[in-house]
Length: 387
Ligand SMILES: NC(=O)c1ccc[n+]([C@@H]2O[C@H](COP(=O)([O-])OP(=O)(O)OC[C@H]3O[C@@H](n4cnc5c(N)ncnc54)[C@H](O)[C@@H]3O)[C@@H](O)[C@H]2O)c1
Image (tube, rainbow, N blue to C red):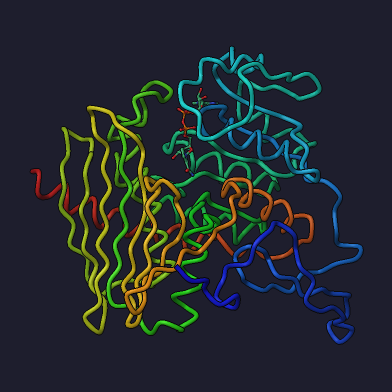
């Protein structure tokens, strides 16, 4: 084992690093900061534009809503002022009924005193104390709630997929453009340390151009959701639109749009449970993606492999030490990755951008709509094969 040169290491830590400031010629004071840890740079306005707090209204206290609740609680610049769920027990803070926990540190009993609690999401959206509406609802509700919140003058975070289909995504994009509000979609791999680091290495060019990549993501079917919406194909789109879309977004982020897509898989009735997709790119390059929900259960596992001209990268969450590995000249380097929750990093970045009034880089409406479009291209091929 040998260390990889520091220059190729992903940046660590959660702090914004000031790279330069000034900008008198722009008419406002600005600071150029490194939006750690993505290794991207952004010009952000400082001074009177900076807000101390972002007041958050969270809709949907399910598996993901609970995780987001914890993330906002960890952020000193986020205030959860309102929550909403149609389930009465969740409105009282009794969250022990949540049968799936995506790494949330929030206990089963939450003190919701001091928080406005709503049964109807329309009431939360109308609450003047709320700056940011965070939507953790089943997919069929994404478009209507996002558009309603944007039109009420709120900034919005909506979980992935952005919406059920491209038509709905287009409606949302129109509302974003018309209102000028911000929307981030929860494509959390863009903050996932191993995926961020791998992209930096691929784009750094030190190991040559990429030739082949594979992504995999699998686990037991999610049979714990509210009213079983996740295992109802017409509501979740099954493994393709709900889970595999993470890898679709990551592949588009790393490599752009392919020239062709060939997808096959398994559907149980209207529920896609397995997808195997091959994307072909100019220059004889290939991306292979696998996603599956096993109705027999089993552990959640995900990862990727990338073959570059002079090195290969791989990561598998099932490894005893899930680092990013690079093999080059028959020698394996292990990239230490920072151990921060991607969900925390994602929402911290959102809160920070809203406080500064700066543009969002990840989970944009355009990129998220493209992920829905590609996932549907795969879904249609899969459905056709099952007719
Ligand atoms: N980014 C990720 O890694 C990730 C992981 C899991 C889920 N998600 C996404 O998060 C979203 C929610 O999924 P989940 O797993 O939390 O689902 P869930 O079934 O656990 O939770 C949904 C919640 O919404 C509530 N709800 C349903 N209809 C409502 C309504 N009309 N008004 C108010 N509340 C209502 C339910 O009572 C429930 O508490 C989905 O878009 C899903 O794709 C993302």
